[in-house]
Image 1: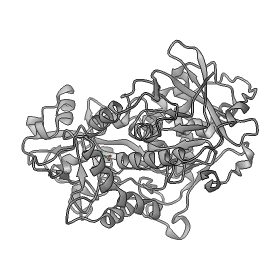
Image 2 (image 1 turned 90 degrees about the vertical axis):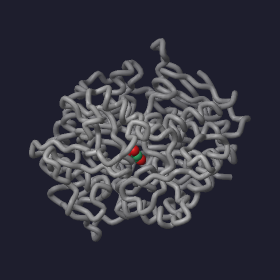
Image 3 (image 1 turned 60 degrees about the horizontal axis):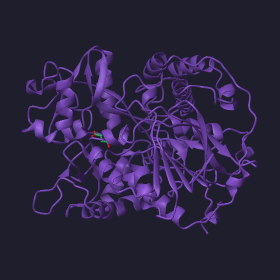
Image 4 (image 1 turned 30 degrees about the horizontal axis):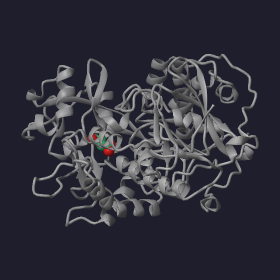
Length: 527
Ligand code: SIN
């Protein structure tokens, strides 16, 4: 067994921000299932939203975030984040993180969908995530150990099941290891891989969602999945993201005949909220009509969008022809492990930050370029909280591994899971489709898997299991929410139903952990 003060599972922007902000006397380990840079943060083409322009105001950023989130957001949390955003960006910039500027000391600000002002800060054009992650990795100090290719597959609670005090992980050589710490942080990213069309890294298989659910933490808002409108679509497969910044710079969505598909659909046309653009493209593709991004109005496309240009070239799409074939695909899950603004979950000692968390900031649909921001913001706040607490240092002496039975049932074949999720729990949902998917999923014995010992499973089987758990929670929530809101669209309930659903969260929590009675806001622990 290895002992630390803080275990961070995952290595995206939120994890790295936390690691950098923790005090140097804390012994911290980052456990990541592949390489440090294999994840969604590194792929992020979009930038970081912050009200920096003289004509802008954090309050406008706040209003845009609530509007995109269909007012399902935690408004106070949004207010705090949007107010802190300019200071966060300026702090990073001053400490050496390179953001794109005009060469005269002013940051360049881009436009993206559903923003009322130009407020997106980029780095290296569409390589923002890569540059920020590299910057934060370079600054990690000696108190931070890193173990790559180490797959965390279970959380360990104390004997009384009142506190998380460690994890079990698969090492690169196949052995299992126990890591103990009074603070265990899930920073594992989202679960975009449960859908056949996705912009997400292959590692985004819902690990943190499954770990937390098996351990008994509260999860919320799992029905809210954002489908990004424009993924490159070649030979029947999605091949990666075409950033919304491309539309922000003037590209428009057209059919092969040149008809602009967003005319008359929404006043913001091609920059309407993502769910509206995605549903419109999806309607065309259901009729067998391919939609393209017409980039003819963008000068110097290759240098402005190096990542997108390379992606297109690598898949045989010539940007010189000005038309990029696109379809929508899963991009971000707004729901996840329910936390407060410090990242504290319903289980003391267990935290969640970044996409795996549901802080309430994104509401029913995330505003573009708010995710790197949220990761930095909440990662920093969690560091402040951990730095200020001595809680539970003795608790890991009470480490207890309960006896559980092994279960060797079948799991869904990943390709079938992804396609059925896309077709039945995807961009357009109905009761019939969701029921069909729920029934199909139920044959794999979710409840047995939740209670089983899984130490003997290989990393690839664990990935399958975690995707299955995440897919089941998304499907259950989507069936339960009989309205449309943000990223959740029910064709049979096409409107928002404020009377029944406004601000109402669908919570998932297993009953067998202290009857789900952990206090949520553990303010007493902050001393
Ligand atoms: C994009 O560049 O379109 C993605 C940005 C984001 O999702 O925040």
